[in-house]
Image 1: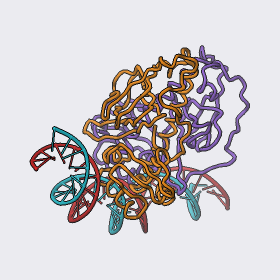
Image 2 (image 1 turned 90 degrees about the vertical axis):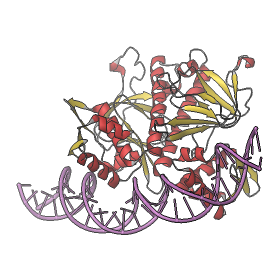
Image 3 (image 1 turned 60 degrees about the vertical axis):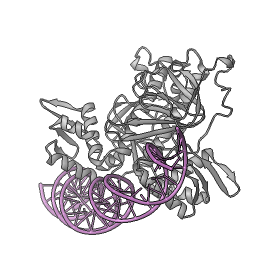
Image 4 (image 1 turned 60 degrees about the horizontal axis):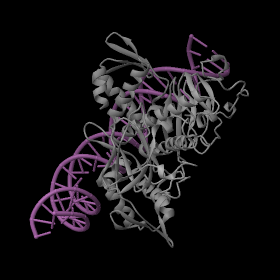
Length: 224
Length: 224
DNA sequence: CGTAGTTTTGAGTGCGTTCAAGAGATGTGG
DNA sequence: CCACATCTCTTGAACGCACTCAAAACTACG
C-alpha cells in the first residue's frame, strides 16, 4: 500500500544561492534529501523546481481515478525529473529509497538567459527523456510478460550491476507492485515470471530485491 | 505529438506563414512537402533538422527486429517531430497523407544563441511532448481495448472534429493497422471494438476512416 | 473486369488476469 | 526476545479478454 503522508510536503529551505553550476561550483548547488517513501511533488503541483537525482531512486507515477497506476519512470542518479507541462507537474514523484536531489530552478530549463551551460544540460536531459520514453512505448505496447520482465532486469543490470566474474549482481528498491505498474502487468504475473526465470537458471533471487544474473545473454535474448 | 486525454493547448493557428521567426524574412522559412506514405526520416539517421507539421498527418514509428511495430505518435499541424537523442533520430517518420512541414535547424532546439524565440518554442514543444507521452503510457499499460479505442476516437474528435449539431464528424488518415500499433492492439481487435461502438450507437462509421460521434459523453466515459 | 490490399467477422486458443490462500518479511509493543 | 499484526511475495485454480488463424466482404486500382 502506498502511503501519502501530508507532512512530507515541501519542507524546503528557501533557495539560497541558485545559479552557477557552470564551472562545477559545487558549493552553490542546492540539494534536498529524501527519506524512503517521501514525496517530492504531486501531479498538478505548480512547477518551480526540477530535480537532478544524485543518490537513491525516485519513482514517477500517474494514477487514474479508479486507482489504476502506471509508473512512468524510475529516477536513478544522473536522471532529471519534474519536467513541467503548462507550468504543472504531470506525474507524482516519490522516493523509493533514501535519496538526494539537486534542485534546479525551472527557469533554467525554459530559458538560457541566466545560466546557459545548465540550460543546455537540462534541454539535453529532456531530449534523452523523450528518447527513453519512446523505447518504453515498445515495451508497454508490444512485448510479452516474459520480454518485459527480462528487459527490466537486463536494463537494471546494465545500469547498476556489479560483476561477480561470469555473473552479475544488483539490487533494486522497487517492490513487485512498482515493477508491475511500470511494465503494465500485475504483481502476480511479475512474481510468476521471476520464478520462471529462476527455474530456468537465468537468475538467482537472493531476496525479492536482490538478483544475480547467471546468464546475461539468455536474459538479453529473452528481452527481445 | 501524442494523442492524449489532456486537452491540448497552443495549436498553431495559420499554417503557411509560421509565426516562429519574428522579425525575420518570412520567405526564409524553409518548408517541405510530403506525399502520402513518403518518408521524412528513419531511425538512426543523423539529425540535422526537426520538423513542425503545418498540413497533413505524420506517423512516428518504432520497429522491432521481428517486425512488431509500435506507433509512437501521430503528428498533426502544430506538432513538432524529430527530437534527437545523441544526434540521431530515434524513430521513423512517414506521412499518412499529403503533408507539409516547416524545417527547423536542430541547432535552434539545442541552443538559443541564434534565434532565442524559436529556441524557446522548440523547448516548449519538447516539454509538451514529454507530458503527452506520459499520458500515453497510461493508455498502453493500463487500459482495456475498449478504453483505448474510445480514448483514441475521443481525442481525435476533440482535435479535428467539426460539429454537426448534436453530433460531431471527423476523418482520419490512419488505417486499422496504424491505430492498432498506436494502441498496442491487433487490427482485428480494433475493428471489433469499432463495430461494438457502432452497434452500441456511440458512433457511426461513414467509411473506415470517417466517423460521426453520436454520443460524446458515452464515448468520453468509456475512455475512462 | 481481375488482382491486391484492407476491413470485418467467425471460431478457437492462450496469456495474463482475477480471486484466493499460504508463505515469508517486517515492524511494534509487551 | 516473542507474539501479533501487517504487508509483501509467491503459488494455485479458473476465468476472460485479446490474440491467432481463417475466411469472407469490401475497396482501390490497374
